[in-house]
Length: 627
Ligand code: ADP
Ligand code: MG
Image (cartoon, rainbow, N blue to C red; front, side, top):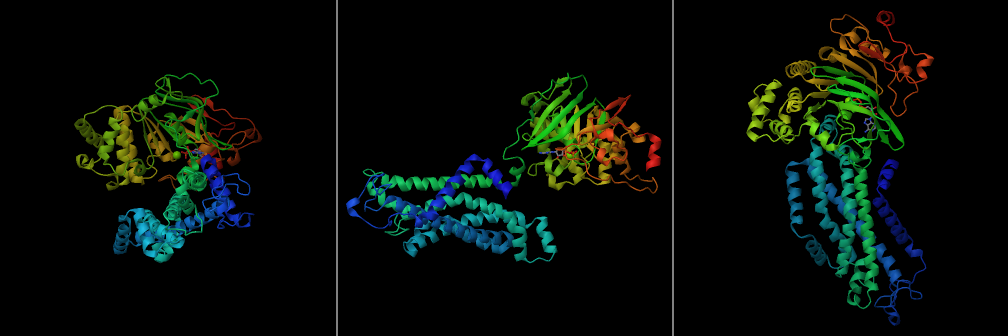
């Protein structure tokens, strides 16, 4: 709740709307105890007194009634009727929508056709017809306004409910033996509630206007009772001669509706969970760069990161997700990045092409040089021309990276045409070739498939084909096999390996699995809490891990045919990257940690081909002793 309010008031306009609305509500609440004249007492001698007259702060109307008093009691009435109409419409409309959407089939059909019949009439005409049938009066106006708004809620909420009714969690609730009523209340309602609140907060102002409209026409509140609409209606005759009689209720209507709408918009934004973490802002197309130190000069490797530092600034907190990472990869080479979940692998990979969501992400130091050019300072257009063209990505979950409504062929073609104009025919032929290249059988037929028509392994092959579409120099694969089962994983790995040899690709392969690294990578970098703790040729590291973390990480991996062996989980958790400890980040979980480990920062010490960030590296024979 506190978080919701914080988020709501970060939006200044919503704050303004809320403030104004609270003020109006307060005034409306205390109106009966204010020392005001009776709003309905006429005094023909005092007709049309102008504002600021003695005893009548806002003047009087055509019957000499005090305008301030009428305005406040009118506001009370209009608010009460508008809010009541909104509540009634919301409750009835949403219930109809939920029942229709949830039950589906014939019930849905009949209910929705009835709703459609109501919707077929123009809005105001329908309201007028209802009041005409029931007779004028405020209660009937309320019923009319509520009735014409019911279809709006019913349609909206039904649409959302239909989408939810077939979700797995509803099936799970059914398997649990819950009744329809229980499912509606415990599974469906919490999910549609935000939509209901949003629909209501954005229409309540409109309903107040409609009630005022009916009163204006003389169909709502009856004289002498004042509401804002009837005040306007009565003042109409004197609009030119005594404008203040219409301006006063007019301004009040304007203020009420505006403040409700501003607040409603704010509520809609704040309630959307997707906007919560992003602090109500859309990420920029390229990560913000704020380098304080002078960046090291880029070098000639195909892709090299030097002292790259990426942080997330969320409120007061600074998450140092990547804290000075240096890596490089050349043609035909495969570099593995391995580490526990949360160690900063994905953020490192996304930083390369400026894809870290910003805000809150920022690159605060280091360089990413691609063919000798620094990409960290590069313009969005430069980055865009490289993304997917020279440097391509493969992500973990192909179902969420492929567009569900286009065939895989169209998506492959789009990937090509984003970078160069390829005639449609050639592009189609090339799409088939690409699918063949990733060993999809019957590729000519398969290009016409939608993503949901393929299995997980097939889809991941399509993602790889997309990454290959523009013959990139580097492919960055972020846990591409984690969502797949082992046999498919093995196929995908050997496919990537073949492609690397055929096309001289450089691959940066991110994983948390040493088995995968062993199969594919020439070199491997072990990450922990945003830093590389050990790096070197894969074989050397696998034979002789020197950082205690690497060693423990390897001890977690079961070995086929390796005989019985106890698997050692690493006790404790990695430190949160917004409060990293002073010295070695692993010290708290390390069995060899000494006092010095917890003091200053520890350097990544190069030793020939390898490098390790540890004051007391483990040596090979110690492994037998300690495990
Ligand atoms: P992984 O190694 O599992 O790929 P990530 O690179 O995704 O880890 O995340 C590294 C760290 O960055 C995590 O500890 C996480 O707390 C932090 N992080 C990632 N995205 C955000 C964000 N939007 N806001 C704050 N912190 C983030
Ligand atoms: Mg990740």
